[in-house]
Length: 265
Length: 321
Image (cartoon, rainbow over all chains, first blue to last red; front, side):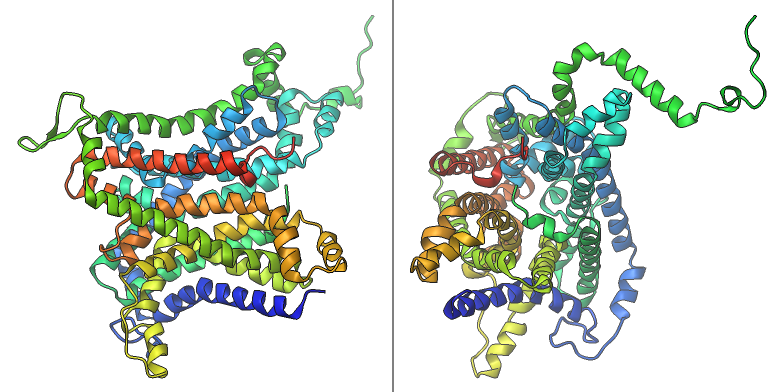
């Protein structure tokens, strides 16, 4: 159906995209197995010693645990808040709905450096800077539109008559919400929650602004180490993120199917 | 005389399940604290937590605005008491910041152009391919970097572009001397394009899905070659997606920190890096806050102008009503 020249041109561009998107990842994972003390590619020999080294490194372990805590806080905050907001936007007629949408898109339109520094000043004033939970809350703020989006689009696909049917069968308002609405938008909640968790796990700039030497999370730790010296153990740490990303993609595909992102509204 | 129920009567053996009790309690609680007559405001009650959470960000902006009105007293290293616009004047008059702003805007423009150029065919092939394996593969290739995070991706690019890196080794095979590929402007733009590609494709794909295949068939049956049907059918119909993707890519690139910091090696600072330095190197909080606010304004103006000319594209939330 498509012309030959179009196929060749488009596929050439697509292959270029595939190359620039995946080669860095492959290189990082490959470099983590090198026996040399400096990063080299193709890797010399094969060894797992760098993984042994990072498994024993206390600072990296702690940074990893902190990242997990931060992402969990982000998840706990963002899932209820985002779900309710997504439902409100798609199921209720709100006055000033347009203004609310613009307001709720602020986390995306305000530059991350601006939101990060603003929240740093606020948390500093509240004297909570230096604990981990504010980082999780801040990450929930900056990524909130993601979960609102995914919940509201799956609420848009839910038939409103189902809720009416439930209440005419005698379900109370809470039962209707809990047994009809929430399961109905569950794909959106799961997708949004997964996005929030993984994006919080790998988020860098806001974490850099809100953490100090005692509370660095893993991405910040990697950044700090890169600035001093590039060694293969860093490639091994980075491979941890590759594994997390693989898991997330696999889960997302199993739970809702990646193709859902191709659907038009 | 009332009938005494027998032992087998379901009315006596039936126990009200715990789950029902909980549900009843919750329903009653809801009726008490949020009676049905409040239902016109239910939407507001549901959206309130989100409004408050984002309010944290707004509060931060106000805090920053306040802070930007105090200059740093070089003698005591404390912010001055008096309110002044001096910081803004410093920023506007400074040639250094002028250069940094020009560089950021120029880089963002280039990034939007190259990213859309690559993302459009990618999204098009992904949407139109008949093979589900190809589609899945393209999706996985897209999502992996999206989840891996910026630092690790920049680290991968550092390894590739380094003087002893893969790219130079490959050039060496064809007899070209190692060249410095890192710590210059093209490296930063390349890093940004690589970083933005997944965002752009994911914003474009739904817009392309919405274009029925038949419109293109119709165009070609009327004698249009593929370039013409692309130019006159696909691109106009995909415009909301292109605008949405362009806006997201442009603002993210304009305000990026990590790519200029890591691939630019300190010589290619963007506005975000300048702000960071003011806060954490020179500790001039007021000047940094002024810069950050000007960046917010710059970003909003660009977004506002684009939206008022072309519409919000696919950026609207709320889905189908």
